[in-house]
Length: 112
Image (cartoon, rainbow, N blue to C red; front, side, top):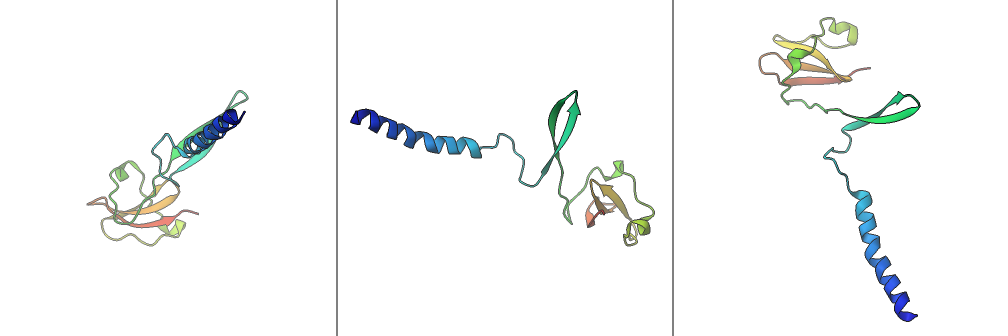
């Protein structure tokens, strides 16, 4: 009887850390705060889709800014006039001020 109780206690003590390790493990390489979950509904089924959103910072290089339309009526959106060789571009839910020559980010403003 004592042997069975000791074996049960030893098993529980070994299994508890392994159970906690499985709960905290993330199988993907997403950084915290760089994802959002959207739902798509298909014939009474709900599928979750992970959309990765890049967080831009001033001084970073944005290589694909030419694919996006430049904002010409910047006053309408409450943006300041861009300098020479700069363009405002909307990326996700942010307005990004890009230097045309280098592709560096000169400023970021959250869209309303």
